[in-house]
Amino acid sequence: MTVDELISRLEEYRDQLGGDSEVRLMTQQNWPFENRIFGLATRRRTLTATGIARLIERGIRANFAPENQEAEIDRLAELFADMAMSRATDGELAELAGESKKASEDARWLDAIACELDR
Image (tube, rainbow, N blue to C red; front, side, top):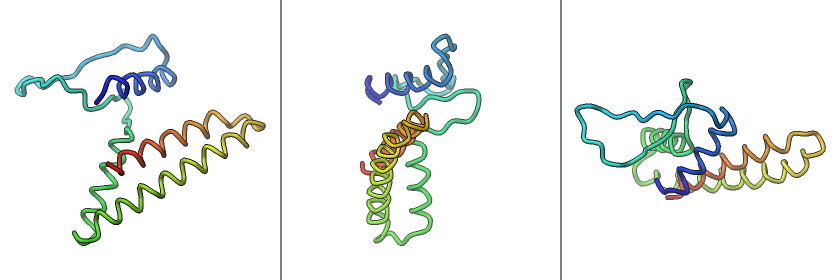
């Protein structure tokens, strides 16, 4: 995870939970801490774009022949990217109905998932 990715995720949490939310660090006593942040979570179960992409990839690897797995992941990455662009356009149209913030948030999530699948 990069500093910019961490800042972006923390900004999302600040928007959802407020800037005065408590921050905690979780480590495992029997495993050395490797100075790496894998993800963020709240008390309620929260999936990140990375988590969603990994879940999709596991499903593809379980249900597609090995020779077809990468092509299917590429196809889904492109689909998510297209959906993100479409939803971003919806945000511009939805501004009149007061739905632009939600459409923009959806577009960011879809784009982030597409980027994670495209790695």
